[in-house]
Image (cartoon, rainbow over all chains, first blue to last red; front, side, top):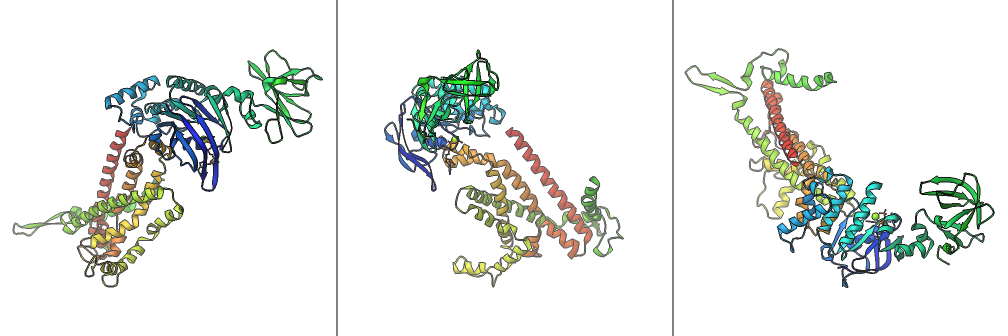
Length: 330
Length: 290
Ligand SMILES: Nc1ncnc2c1ncn2[C@@H]1O[C@H](COP(=O)(O)OP(=O)(O)OP(=O)(O)O)[C@@H](O)[C@H]1O
Ligand SMILES: [Mg+2]
């Protein structure tokens, strides 16, 4: 039950401005993901919302109330840190219980609540262990459990999966999606630089760059209709191809999955196959144009190409995006 | 390797043990006679049914020295730990010029003990010392105090200087421990709205406790061997004479080398005993934690 409004938020560290005049509205129960390259200000945004950093200028409203000067507790937030931030000298139970505000819970209720949460996260058998006696994935679940028992209005995650291996990441990603389903009223804000996490988890994605918001939209909006070259290249994997026009003023953007390989002499461009990566379900073909640009084409496993072939490239016409010199759409 | 160790450590040690059982004196170290435990304890019969015990174990001055040493060690280490913790917490906070302050804090520790002892001896001088001058001007005292000579204040003076001198060392050891505490758990506590005082006692202190224990052990062992400060600041004073000073006086000043050797031996045994006790206690504590 938290609605969030950021109005012209800026943040300076000394004389360095790292967040520039950011405005954003988040609905109650929404799952919003902040993505962006390293140093783009994602964590800083999250910490401003959490109340771990002071807002230099602008207004933060939670449920319509100005929250700039509220403590994290008053804001009703819980946070999962990238490094988990578990208390190293306390066992799992105490980590979850420490600082748990019991004013609306009796001690036995709190105890039952902690045990229920632990059970739902499959960490019940570790309640007596210290964090260092747990695996990375288990620690991660403890960190999430510690946040859940606080019954937050606003659930914040800062790159919670970045310390896990690939397989565990996929699993935990699914668990977080399920968690959101189980807590439909809890607003969640999730920071990552992994665009797959963003695409799979988000109701809406906020793309950040250099302390600015580049675009806000649903995953599909960002994929099909990015407002500029930065977003176009950042969302989607493998990355969108950007090909310079002959006049060197405008650029053509086309995703690897939206190009067909055709016979030499056909299609819009021609080039030489420089490398082939066969991934099973799909094959990635790297084609070097005469202008030295490298174009990535994603084809099914039914197409056969060989290295050093000359091929034609035929983009799907209505998937082409045009960018001007500054990277804006045109 | 073992041979080198034997040569540099064991040999002098056992020479000292050995002299403790002889009648050695400084000018006749090569022609000594074995006297058994006479330096430690001896019953001297006066022949008329009466007699008396002599030796280190019944020497009141010696036991006074032992007591002085333990008292000095306990009080100085307690205060140094307390102040060291406070200084470390301050130094661990973020403020401008922290690097310089950290270096400056170490100055008292960096000055050689004999120099700082002399320095303080002047400051505490009963007639010309700045300390008396200051306290008189502030009307804390009405007449000059002979800090280092008066038996009421000699120990206080020694403690003051030692605490002044060694707190920085303690602070630095504790600071090293504080810097091991991950920053993010403070943020987690802040998110949970845990009161800073509770954070200190429930999070910071338990985590840095091993560092503090190690620092205390180091300091306690050091304090029990204290010599130069006391020898310079309050020479030949019953109220501050520690075991080391006692041994040194007999070894070199009173020409009773054997008696001094016996005292050195006991000093070694006492410190060894205390060390083992502390480590044993530390072990059980650590064991409980795991
Ligand atoms: N305490 C601080 N003092 C000074 N500058 C800071 C501070 N914290 C962050 N910054 C700067 O603010 C900018 C944004 O940092 P932030 O941590 O928000 O990036 P991020 O998007 O989370 O990056 P990453 O993906 O690497 O975590 C960076 O340029 C960083 O150097
Ligand atoms: Mg970050």
